[in-house]
Length: 206
Image (tube, rainbow, N blue to C red; front, side, top):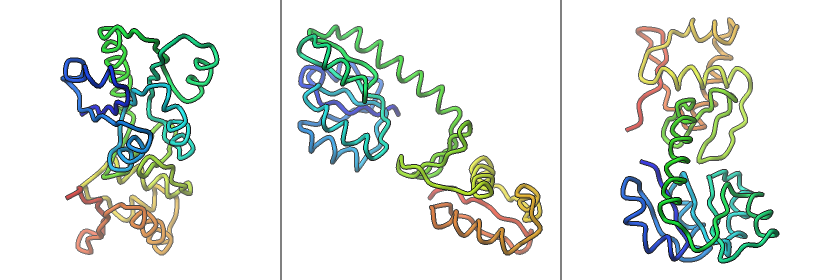
């Protein structure tokens, strides 16, 4: 379910009406925002501009969560700063129906993008950029690591022949293949080898 973190008093008071179709949490301070993001991955932040420094700090750790800033007044400087780390800048008084439309838009946009994602536990792989993330942080992979990661993620719980894997990485070295798979295991891939079929399988999360 689409997860929203709210740290804005007016929006928080109306959250039951606005976000009945979504899962949401309410934070009451910058520290609370940070604490909640460590325990849950959110798809959208709705925060008062007063918490701009908190979002700026999260961005330093590669947090790219869509953010809607809400401010008490119109200010060009604030708008410029908000769009450095955010996606929307709304000024009070807020039209709740308009806010709901914007949230629905970002949900649809994320849903479309997620069709290009392969996910596994706390990992996700962008098929377009060929980039693997763990807990929303980029994981550096070699070209062959990347090929194998995508293959396993797109074939979860399916046996993949050792020889097919070697073909994919254009290698004849079983030892090298074991090294690549060992690295994926350290990252969090639960891969098992079946001697009977001479194949590997990425096990489904428990």
